[in-house]
Length: 315
Ligand SMILES: C[S@@+](CC[C@H](N)C(=O)[O-])C[C@H]1O[C@@H](n2cnc3c(N)ncnc32)[C@H](O)[C@@H]1O
Image 1: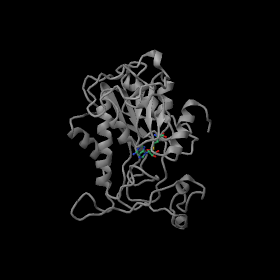
Image 2: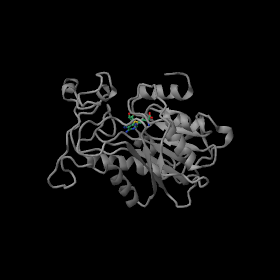
Image 3: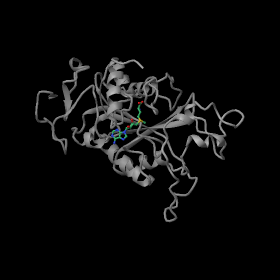
Image 4: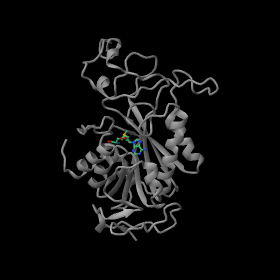
């Protein structure tokens, strides 16, 4: 039932996904001629993920793993640049709802997303003199990525008529996403805490320095696949191997590796990452004997991701 490149029209129902989803067999591993909707497997496609997901059939993905851009952190386009965090939650929920539509009832969706304080992020190099980072509070070396990474110019978004939009509030964005997906009938199956070996320095502040990020797990059915022996723990210390691609907000390869393994779906399945970035999820999927499909808005990053995944380019 899998669609081939040579077909001009999709075999699958693009809007309702009522046609039989493609069965990926061992003979199709690393196959780029098999398609889900119009999208070839084992390829990162340079396209807006919402547009792309809407063209995919329902119930065709075994595991989804992703880390979308966080609200107002950095980036040159796409999701995460919304001035109003309510728009961000709405836009991201729309994408993630499509991810859930594409997920098989046996599948799981692993969402790594960081929270944001309602405070400005407007680092300019002239601000270095005010930096309170480092052991003696006078700043890290000027070349430290805490200063050189491309950051968003976010303002605090304060609204008197919306009490949670106060200055200084931790916006609880991951939980707002969890609630939005549960309100649509999807199952929130748990949360893994990724305990970071090398957290970003945060300077002097009247709150805990963040050393962790959450990974929320969603499913469509309580009968989804999952590793039960040994049981999956809820706090993970991941191996933080360096990602040498030019992408500035990657997750470690160990993150998708651990999620895909814990998902325990039959091999070879299809692993989706709608925000593929440098290609980490694709690399993990192939390493574990699965196929992948990915979307990335930035076309240059998409080109690099495909080269990185196939090993045509070493960074
Ligand atoms: C946090 S990064 C993902 C990094 C990835 N996990 C890795 O390890 O390389 C999020 C990515 O989503 C992309 N993005 C933002 N909006 C998008 C959209 N609407 N469709 C597809 N990609 C998008 C950004 O360009 C960015 O590369």
